[in-house]
Length: 261
Image (cartoon, rainbow, N blue to C red):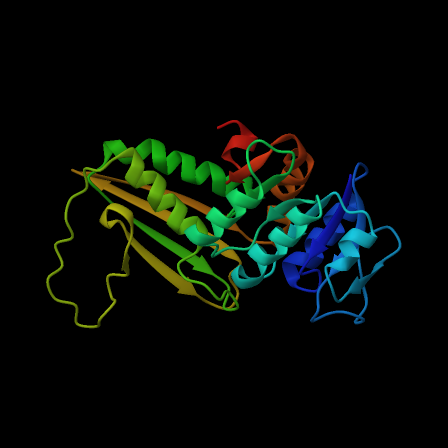
């Protein structure tokens, strides 16, 4: 399968390029990044491919799938561009809102033939963490989500944290109210997410991507935590999406369906 990577000069994009390049059944045919055009090549073991400035490189290279790790304001227009040219899309950019998802659903209708996979987190362990939190939600009275990321992450809270809270809220609507009446510092209790589940965002140098789900009940607590220490942790999920997107017409949000959970 012929693959193009958008955002190829960034840390995630360059890691995706190397992963695609190292896969025997995939061919890196285009690397796109206006910020990195002409700065060098992208790839891994095979001859490095020059980074192009525009999306036209995807068409020129005959890309069948485009992987996007850019920014929310760019990822959706990039995917719409791909849809108009018959290219499947895999989006790892976080922060795509409901409006953006609606645009993608319209551009990639379920009737096909094109597919689009949007995942807030491609780490398979993170997907399992969300599933475990969803399973545990009906058995506890209170819950909070703490997500921790590197200091270059622009959006907060993370897409993973929001999706986790949504899935927990859908699994149980019976949560104890927040007892806090006075905040000595505004925002000390974090953001109120779905069903009032509190979400806290930490930005710190030295981190990559981490999340804890804390659930509490009478006399007990349950902590579900996932840690990504290296961007390589996302690559099995990215490659899974690349390999399956063509067989899944329409918009798929999250890796759960691809993993069968």
